[in-house]
Structure formats: C-alpha cells, structure tokens
Amino acid sequence: QVQLVESGGGLVQAGGSLRLSCAASGRTFSTYVMGWFRQAPGKEREFVATITWSSSSTAMLDSVKGRFTISRDNAKNTVYLQMNSLKPEDTAVYYCAAAVGGTVRTQKETYAYWGQGTQVTVSS
Image 1 (tube, one colour):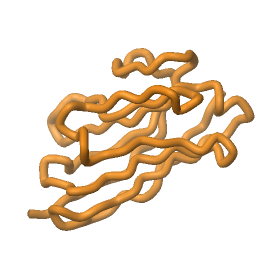
Image 2: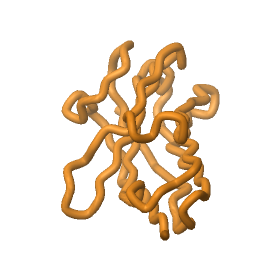
Image 3: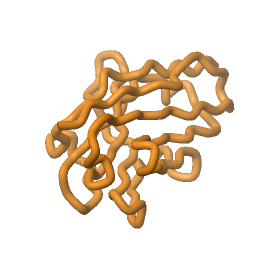
C-alpha cells in the first residue's frame, strides 16, 4: 500500500517554472514505477511523465519534452516534476501515481495508487 501527497502547485506566468513534489508513504517506494498525469477541465486525464524505480528509464509526453523533467529520490520517498517554460496549455490538476513493476508505463489504467492532485495554473 502506498499513499501519495503532491505539493508545489500554484499560479505562475507563462515562461515561468514550478517544481512539483510527490511524497510517498511505505517502505517499498523504491520498487514502484512512478508517474505524473494531468487533467484539465473538461478533458481526460493524460500521461505526462514516468520513471522506473532505479531512474534508469523515463518517458515523457511529447508536448513537454525539453521543458519538464521527472526525477526521484528513493531515500526521501519522493518523486519530482520540474516544469520549465510553462505555457497556458499546461494548466491542469497534476496527479502523482504509483505502479508495481519495473518498466515505464504511460497508461493511467496500469497505476494502482493516486494522490489527490495539485493545481497548476499558467497565466498568459
């Protein structure tokens, strides 16, 4: 069982940066694949980024490549999403998720545990 708590969201102007954090409970955090998803009003929840337990492999949504970076610190049971050059279209609630397994995954149905989400609003 893993409990996830996101933080770091807020209001930022276009071109600005935010770093989201997701703190996980549980001693087996290092065995989980972690992911970030987002959901804008009226839209489906979409994949943003994922990272394996060893940080050896990551995957990113095409529209955030070069702007967002996912990383994790297993000693702190925390996964991060560094977001740079933010655009108004990045506005959404961002969710952290955890899945058992060793490979990156982009399908939200494959994640068993979810946080409550943190709002990111990018103004133009």
